[in-house]
Structures are given as structure tokens and as C-alpha cells.
Length: 332
Image (cartoon, rainbow, N blue to C red; front, side, top):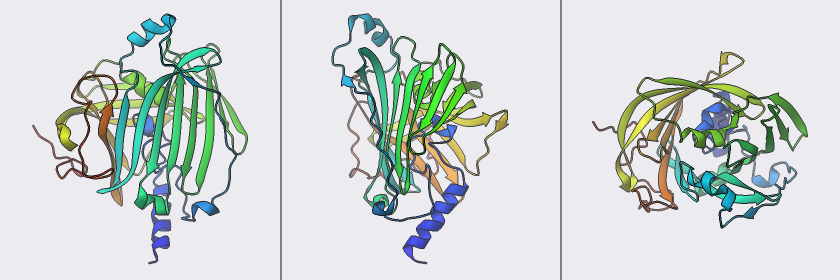
């Protein structure tokens, strides 16, 4: 079978599995990092992809010094301001992409907000057949930790979309807008409804789950508001690069819309570290043809814990021979 035909078959299969993580609530915890969103069954070159309008976000200025009126809010953040989380994405044992999550203070229209950003790019191998370059940003009010705006600029193969959601929590409304086809939706929300990025960081502030405990949340993803059910499994230990054996709680999320569960042909699990940072250390999705894994590869920024160190793997997308990317190599 010619190479491009094999690629077509694989992309069609992925599309049928509904592992569209950027449009699925399963991406809530890291979601956004897996380059399977919006997959289209055509491996045409980037030059043949349709052109879409460029959306320019509001003018931002990076804030180096915390304003006195926000010192308390920044001090009370449960994660370090300026933290950077780096992840590697694998298709089976093949590294296919890298994702970086950062946060900083920005000023827009005279007000200071928290900006949390995800940037995911495919590596050289995947880039030849299915280039991925995704940028996602959530602008958050520091005093309420509620989102003001959520924006995503997705470029995956021939699939391109730029979408923006603005939140009006006082009136319990959100406006979702897709720039390419000028489509707009006005949605009813709760006073504490969050987008998937701000929700992920909000969850880092919550008390640890007990084994077997299940909680329900409401989160907005694209033009829908979902009920998210998160169930804690058990604490597991596995090896991550030169971090050694790390202890993380295993979770299995499940989403429902309009009272009906969103069913998928694949399964997904995620692991959250059992230390003050509460970071996602691993995500795993099993689909009929392979297993997709997302592993933390480095943490930088403020702090002096063991996460803040350089991960010494062979190259940008190298794999430590003991790293757990396939079936979990657990340790009691």
C-alpha cells in the first residue's frame, strides 16, 4: 500500500474513533496536547490546505512586576507563577510531538490577568505527513480565577480553526465564535463555569481524591457545556525519565452532554502527582490500532523541588529505556 494511502486509512480510523481531543472534554487535564484533534482523512501538503483568516488577539503587555492590589491574589496561587511544564507525546513508542504549558501575567485594556498557554508542535517525522502547530490560551481573572476569554488556534494537517469564547459570569452567558465561517453560539452557563484550561488549573487547588472517590463538574468545551465525571482509581508508581519512580493517582474521566454520556471507542486515563504541585504526569489513550501516551519531560520556573530539573533524555524526542510509555511498569 502506498505511504499516502496508509496515512489516509489511519486518519480515517482516528476520525471514526472520535478521539478529537480539542473538541472533546477528555482533553480537560492535558487534553489539548494530543495531536489527534480535528483529524481529516487527507494527507495533502500544507501548501494545498485551504487558507483561513488570521485572528489577532487583543493587544497584550507582559507584566514583570505584580501590581500591589494583586499581590494577595498572586501569593495565594496554588501553582508557581512563571511555571513551565513540558510534555512529550507518543504514538505507541514513536515520539510524535511536544507540548509546553506556561503561565504569566499580562495586561489588557489597563487590567492585569493571568494567561495560561498551551503550545503543541509535531516533530520532524510527523511533520512530513501531518503537521501540527496548536496554540491555546485562557485569560483568567486573578481574584475569582474565572476565565474572561478562551482562544484556540488549531492547525493540524489540513484542518485549521480559530475559535474564541468570551465569558460573562455576572449574567451567566458565554459567547463562542468560530472565525472561519463566522459562526456564533450564545450559551447559558453557571456562575463558576470554566473552560478546559482554567478548569485544569483550578483542579490543582482541590484537595486530593480518595481512592474510589468520584466527583462531578460542569465545564465548557467549544460550543457545549458538559458534565464531567472524574473517578479516582488508585495510587501507582512508574518511572519517568531521570525523575525515577514517581507516585501518581490514576483517574478515568467521563463526559456527558444533555444527560447522555459521550461514548468513545477508545479509553483514556491520566495520572496526577501526589505532591504539592498536583501536575499531570502521564496521560494514556488506548485505541484499536495503538496506544497514545503523553509524559511529562520537564518542569522549569520558580521552585526548588525535584521537578525543577533538566530531564536528560537522548535528544528532543528521545526515550529513557526505563520510561513507562507502554504498559505500565508499576512498582509497589
